[in-house]
Structures are given as structure tokens and as C-alpha cells.
Length: 179
Image (cartoon, rainbow, N blue to C red):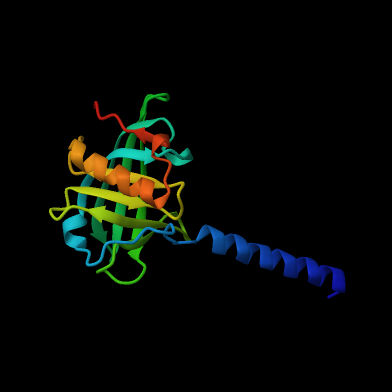
């Protein structure tokens, strides 16, 4: 193999490794801490998205829910939402696995094969009715509830915590639940 071809192959391989490393990152934002101890069985079931930092996979969606169940030793993630521009329901099925063990609410979630992203429950009430979830970075944040609404005092507490971590909470999209 000539020197030029070997260098191209080496650079291509390093590039693939770098992209895979970045794409598979399951970090947690600085200043955020995942809930521990965490009770997986209490977290399973249906959650309504109350607010989110918008990103391309949820653009133009309202009536967003996430349902978590156990399937093949992992947590099945079933996300649904209504695209009010295209006037159709969207669904995305993925899987989640614990990063450090089931007693810590740090998970990695995949909707696309081997590519994982961080899913970190950083606040939850004792009855597991309301949750604040951080992604890999300050670009991803969700407020979830077991019902389509959330009490004002819980909302205020979660917004305060998110701001303290560094989230720009004024950028949150507040999800409508009307269907």
C-alpha cells in the first residue's frame, strides 16, 4: 500500500472514530446531578412533555408524550407528538440503558442504532409525578408530568434549578396538549 493511500485510510478511520465518540456522548451538563437513588419501576409509564428546548426532531410538535416500558432488558422509549404544521402524528421508538447502574438516573438513549445521547433525570418529586430531564448539554432540557399540566410551584422550582445550572429557560417551548 502506498504512503498516500495509507494516510487517507488513517485519517478516514480517525474521523469516523471522532464522529462516533462525539455522537455517542452520554454526558451531563456541568452543575447538573442525576437523581440517586432512582426507582426505575416508578419512572416507567406515560409522561406528558410540559416544556422542552426545541430541536429538529421535535420541531412543530405539540401533544408530546413519552412512554417508558421494559423490553428485552432495556427501557423501551415510545415518543409521540402531533405535528401541527403537517397535520399528522409522529412517533419515534428508541431504547435507553443505564450508564452507571439502575439506582442512578443517568441513562443513554438511542433512536438511531449505535448512536446514544444522554438522558439525565436531575429533579423528580417523591411520587414520581413531575421530572426535570437534562440531555448531554445545555441545548437539551425537558419538563415532564404524569398529567398534561404541572402545578405552578413545581414549574417555578424546576425553572429555578435549570437557570442555576445555566439553561436559558426563556428559550423553552411550552407544549400544548389539546388532542
